Every structure is written in structure tokens, then in C-alpha cells.
Length: 483
Ligand SMILES: *Cc1c(COP(=O)(O)O)cnc(C)c1O
Image 1 (cartoon, rainbow, N blue to C red):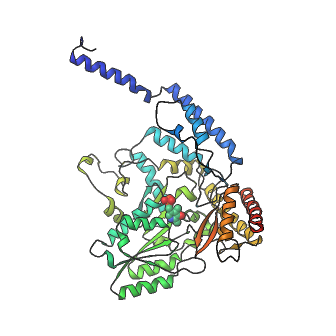
Image 2: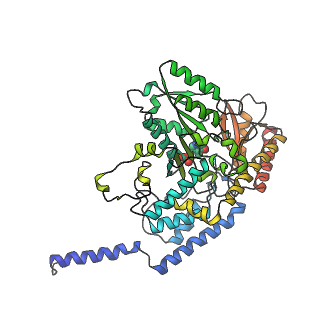
């Protein structure tokens, strides 16, 4: 077909044809305006439905085939598809009636941050590529360093969540203590039964599952027993073992308990053990002045994890790890490859040197934008409100005659059907609550018993939602015990 053209002309022809065919990827300015309008319309409908949106809808997606990647479809059609197939079933995380696991909500201003980050597509791996974007990220890290109370030597990494943040801390501690295949079996890690399972994943990924992992006993408020920790460390040392890592938690996922950080800091200091604090859920409560005292000692830890997608209400996809001494972090994660030789020295630390990722989402923007637009005050108000709501909820379930766990240290409450040797009625109540779905609550096993958990975290959860939860529990509890 190109036979009458020279070879060079044929190539040009082909290039032009490909350019035309590929052009669809670049909408013209008028077109992206209308695309944004369509998405806004979808948001309008979504946000209008929020007040009546339940916490949970059981069921499965029946239009899965429609979601299959195939020929091009219009944005309108796709948004309708999402409204039908994605938005109707499951846990409604955007609803203030989501009180299971650890919710957060997802700030709209943070979604705008993601939009900006993706549309401009700044490369945030190394500072020379986008000094401004890296400065945005490092400013967030500095702000959090001051929240935790670390000094100028600290630094950190913005991660996709708490699991990767904990992994970075574990890898850094492992390297700092020189744990390797030769000595790992004599190395000792200390956790409690309520340490988040992502830490065990992190031990696994870093080869530390071969270390000795001791479960330190907890008191009746599910806080690590610091004296037992001290004794175990001393005993282990006497036996020629190498205690090197304590994983404390500031706000456990199960009950919101805060381990005695100040005492653990002393013990770790005395015995040269790495002191890690997993504050993925609890950490941002430090923004509330009246709660700051509960976290005393965290400033003496070696590493801390926080989850902005929990108690800072950012959409899923944001965790943070902070290291008190940035040299440890850089030692574990800094590399210079030959194809990175253009990475000229800048004042800012390169994010690629502080974690496992090189190219990644510019995830600082989704935190930076809301903090600037709203200021810190509404975050503080929301967190303080959650503390009071959790206490109110706790009194409410107690008054119904349900068995409760300890009074909430932060904003998690556990309860169950009282005086039950097996978990039958509590399990039946969980199923009834899920079937009801007005408010979503999850469950957990604590000390061999099944408990229902209410986590008051969401920025759209207010007293009305808590009253609705109490009403739902009252009704379903009556039905569960009358059957
Ligand atoms: C949620 C949570 C994690 C895990 O974080 P992800 O962001 O889900 O990966 C770790 N520790 C605690 C205490 C948590 O609450």
C-alpha cells in the first residue's frame, strides 16, 4: 500500500498515523472541562446520598463482567457503572456510620490533592527532579517530627500505609543492630498479643521470623507489662541472647490501649534495645493537648509509625514512618545507581533514600493540601470529639447490660453479650448487626473471647451516628437474646 512512497516517507506516514491514533490520550482543554463536570456530577450524587448511607451493605457485585477491560467506553457510562457496581455493596468507608476496624473517612480536599499530584505528575523520588514536590513532602515529615517531639536529626518517609511504615522501621532497626543470618536465632524481639499483625509480616519480610519473638504479658487494660518486659530482657541477656527490638503500641487496634511508653523508653535505654512505637491509629491524638500526656516517652523512641489515613482522615494510601536518627534510615535505604548520576546534591533529603520505593505517587500533596486549607484546628476538634463520643458510647452499651472491656483509652470500645462461656450469642449479635448494617461494627478476639468493636474515628461520625449505633445495638441485642 505504501509501495509508491520511499522508505523514509513510509516511516513518516506510519508515524503520523500512530500519532493520530494515540491522540485520544490527550483530551483537548474543552474536553477535560466537561470530563471534570461529569465527575463532579457523580460526586454530587455520591455526597447527596451520604446522610442516608448505611455503614455496611451485604451482598456481592453482580456486574463484575461489566468491569472487564475491553473497548473504549464513555466516561458517563463508566461513572454509572461505578455507581451501580462499586458504590452499593460493602463497607461504606465514606459514611460516618463506618465504625469498624479503624476508619478515617477520606477528606475531599485530600482527593483534590491527589488530583493535582496526578495531573501535574511531579516526580518525587529525588529532589533535583522536583525540589518543590520534595519540599512539600519533607515539610509534612518535619511537622510530624515536631508533633512526636524528635529533634533535628530525625527524618522519615511517607508510605502507602502503616504496614510499609512498620516494615521500614523494622528493617532499619535490624540493620542498626547488625542482625544477620549468623546471629538471628539468638536475637530477641518483644511484642504483645495486641501488636498489629503487620509487624509480624515485617519480621517475615526481613528474615526476623527466625529471631526469638517474645509475647510480653499485658495488664487488665491490655497494656504491655513493663516490669515483665524488663525481667525478660534481663533473663534473655543472662542466657547469652541479644534483645534488640521492642514493638510498643500507642493505641492498639483491638482496644486502643497505649503501652507505658515512658517506662519502656527507660528499659530500652538501659539495655540498648531499639524502641519502636506503632502509633498508626493513636498517634494523631497527640494533637489534642489534653491527651499529649498519655504519649509521654514517645519522643525517646527510635522509630514511630503514624497513619494519616486513619486519624488524620486522609483517604486510604497514607502512612508515615519517623526515625529519631536519620542516619540509620539512610544507611538502610540509600543507594546510588549508575543511571541516577544526574541526581545532583540538593538540600532536601531524597525520598528514594528513605524507603524501598524509587518512583512513586506524589503522596505528600494529599496531606499538605488539607492541612493548609483547613489549618490544624478542625483536626484537633474532630479528634477530641471522637474521644468524648467513645466515652458516651461506652456508657451507652454498659447501660444496656452488655459486658464492656476497659473504659476507652482513646476511641475504641469493645463489648459482648455478658456471662457467656462460649461466643454463641455474641457471634449471633455480630451477624445481626452486619445484616442490619445501619452502622458498621467489626469484631475481634481478646483473651480467647469474641468481642464487638466500635472504633469512633471517622470525621463524619458525630453524636447522631453514635445514637444510631446504640439504637441498632439495643434492638438487635433484644432480638438476639429473645431467640
Ligand atoms: C492499621 C494499623 C496498622 C496497619 O496499617 P495499614 O495502614 O493498614 O497498613 C498497624 N498498626 C496499627 C496499630 C494499626 O491500627
